[in-house]
Length: 309
Image 1 (tube, rainbow, N blue to C red):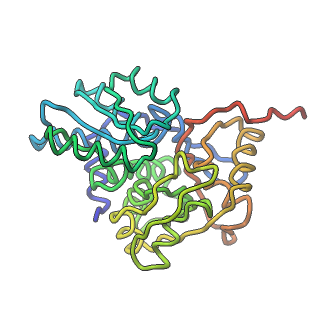
Image 2 (image 1 turned 180 degrees about the horizontal axis):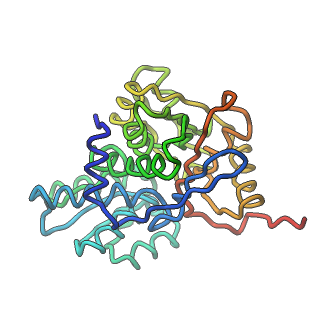
């Protein structure tokens, strides 16, 4: 369980190691441009807080840090480790795109490719961490990680003059949702948005506890967790996070719309949050002040069509 206090501590700890990403106001809605964060996603916040906390507490071994990831989390850990001069080892499935593998190596990480699925890479990374004593950095289900991600929520409140009632956030494993919901508790509500092909939060709320779901669809590369994190579930219940689902077609359309109207390039998973507003999956009340977190941009922009008008 995390609270605003842990998020505030994380913000002080991280300091200016992360970017204070901008916000923009469009069509009466705030957009938090977190896709401009280091390594192209919010994940750098949690990675820095996890590693720095361990260093403060004397728990950061000489063997460094280990992560398992097919994408954003691994990039963030590699970036933070390089900035802090800490060895990093990142396990990825054999199916991981070579552009991401090459980027991990560019950031100085030792990359281990193993298995065909993320779960196999995760198991191998966990075993390696246990064998070597290295600090394992979970992509979303560790208190320090969630608190680090929550610093985005504190920023958003400051940047909008505390004038936000509702924040729409795409959900995969739920680390960002948990951190932001804790950060804004008592001031704003959080709505978790998921493609209906990866409904981890939705199914957990239905069942009363996190459950495994099938992972598929256009956003599986960034929202591909098969189960909501325990921390995310606890925070969602405590703070009253609501879940809405959007179809893949709406996600694709929202991503294109962000490019057409605002020249913003984001991942499909990120576009899910915007799709909730465009489709009416979430309908604001009259006068409700809404913000949407655009949380990642590690995508191939080649399929975005430039409008001719």
